[in-house]
Image 1 (cartoon, rainbow, N blue to C red):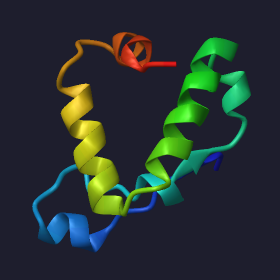
Image 2: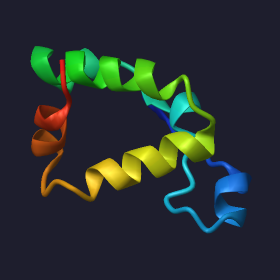
Image 3: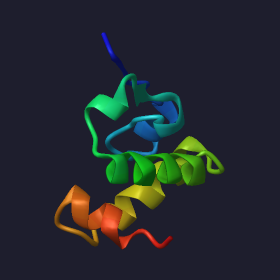
Length: 80
């Protein structure tokens, strides 16, 4: 019961998968699951994505994730 995943019908209608509303989805107690470095990167990413619509956020994330092989590599590729 510590994770909430919110799906977005508009993403599904546009055939964007996974159809997750990133800004409304999340995990409680992330600090117990991630290192301090990972947690910091995830918070920066969420703050950045919050400026986008659900469609824009997912398209951006999918495009950027496709450039890397692992989540760690993706987080390392973030500037800042």
